[in-house]
Amino acid sequence: MFTKLRHPVRSIREPFGTAGLVVAVMALVLALTGAAFAAGGLTGKQKKEVTKIAKQFAGKPGAAGPAGPAGPAGATGPAGATGKEGPQGKEGPQGKEGKQGLPGEDATFNGEPLKSGVTETGTWSANSFLPNHWAFTDISFPIKLEAPVALGAIHYIGMGGSTAECPGTVSNPQAEPGQVCVYALIQVHMEYVQPNMTANAGVALRFESTEEESPAQAALGTWAVTAP
View 1 (tube, rainbow, N blue to C red):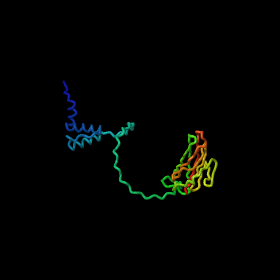
View 2 (spheres, rainbow, N blue to C red):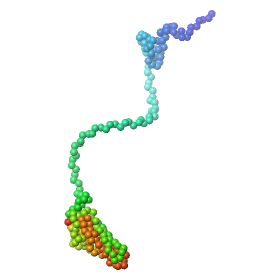
View 3 (cartoon, rainbow, N blue to C red):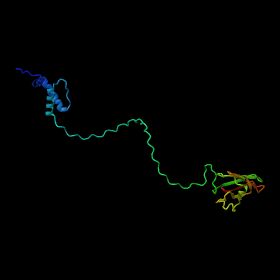
View 4 (cartoon, helix red, strand yellow):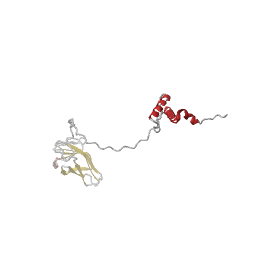
């Protein structure tokens, strides 16, 4: 005798019926995966049955697993657009008055003449390579005088000398107010003759040779002028 075997799917379907099989399968999927089920084809009653069955067979949530390693840093994003300029702020209050500064130099280079009683100094030199010849040199004042000094107020002070109008030395040139003092440091084969010109911006001096055959003639030194 042969036993009639039932089809495997039919054997699962017969205890539940077609609709019951669908409910059971969806409940099992929901219990194992926790995924939502499609609503199409199920009645409201069947949906409740699926949820009820899934809750019965669903396991408790497991413990949280260990944190995974940090992923690699992402690429730098593009620079953002420049923002709009904000409105101008309100003007702040005026600050406190600062302390008075140290006194400045009496003489300035802003075009004003040298102030009365102020002295300025410098160097000068004269030379010639022609025997029995004149030599000229000029002295320019960095800060001009209010007016030119008189020719008689220009004094040539030989090496190591001084006068009442010129009480200084070649290394420390000085001049009384309204006087121009020319101090000699070196004087070779030439002597001072006289001032050749005077102006509020400087003076010119003239020298002459003392040796008719000597080609080397030179003189140099310092000067001082004090505004009257």
